[in-house]
Image 1: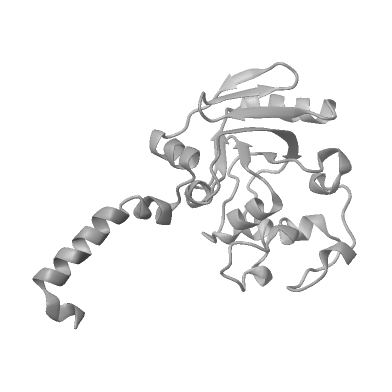
Image 2: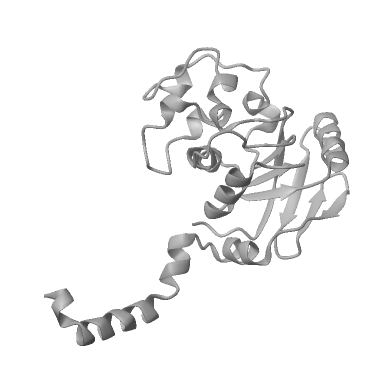
Length: 212
């Protein structure tokens, strides 16, 4: 998993509440267990004017230019600003994979669905909960300031906007450590590789019949 330390990026607004995982990645694209290849179909039904199917060349599909992710002013944004209950619906991890594959590293919202929130940390995304009042203010700033950027610093747990606004954010200490170190669940297990090998060696010596 790619570590997260500090990110400066454009911000893209998705001004909708209760964005569910089916909107993030529609069900017809969930035929792969690979964590990559989903970025072209992130928000598929909102980004495109036709119905998407697996294997289509996304570059040839008609786009909905009213949707923020298609607008040139937000091109390359790695921070997504959203409304409450982002990531609700099914527990599909593909939703986070699609965001990650598209290039999103930070999500800002007043609230997230619990399973989606946990899946973000497992895949190197940083979901940040801010107050409704602050989120509303940020939406106004993004819309009225082309080229609007934020700097998100996980070490200091602060956000600095290009308009001079500064704010702290909370994050669980264990999850913070995992993001800083780039540790998913497999990586955490591999940190104990020496102890695992030592245990296996003892087992081979004490119960050799299990390894015959």
